[in-house]
Picture 1 (cartoon, one colour):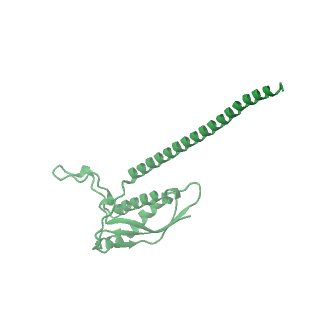
Picture 2 (cartoon, helix red, strand yellow):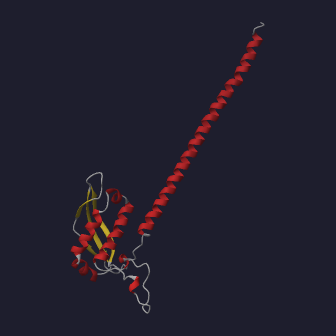
Picture 3 (cartoon, helix red, strand yellow):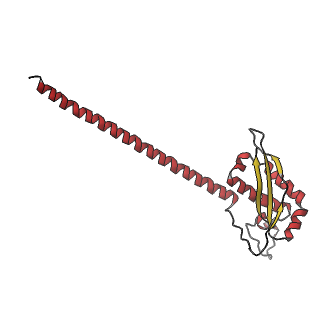
Length: 198
C-alpha cells in the first residue's frame, strides 16, 4: 500500500507535461497557419499591385482606350483586307501569324482613298506585323496595341501626319500639341476577323 501514493504523484506530474505538449503543438499549428495566411495575403497583394502597374504602363504606352462614338443613323463603312501571313520576330522558334482584318472608316468617301492606297497600306501592315513576337500578339493588350499601331501606320501611309510645329508661323493659330496621325485618319477602327499564331 505504500506504493500507491507515489504513483498518483507521478501521474499528476506526467499529466501537466502531456497537456503542455498538446498546447505547444496547437500553438505551433496555429502559428504556422497564420504565417501561411500572411504569406499568401502578401503574395496576392504583390501580384495585384504588379498587375495594376503593368496595366498602367500598357495604358501609358498605347494611351487610354478611346470609345468610338458612332452615329446610329449612319451606315457603317468597312474595307476588308486580304489575309496576311507573316513571319514573327520570335528568336527562339520560327513562328508565324495569319491575320485578317477590316478597317472601319469614318465615311463612304474614305473608302475610295483607302482602296487607292492599298499597296502602301498592305506594306505598312506587313512591316508592323513582322516586328511583333508571338508573346506580344497572344495577349489582349497586345492585340489592342497592334490595332492602335495599325491605325497610326495607315494614317502615315495615307499621308495624314500632322504638320511639324516648327513650320508654323507666329500669325497662324497653333495646332493641337498632341495631334496624332490616327486622330486625323479616316480609319476609326481596326477589327480582326481571323487571328492565328503558329
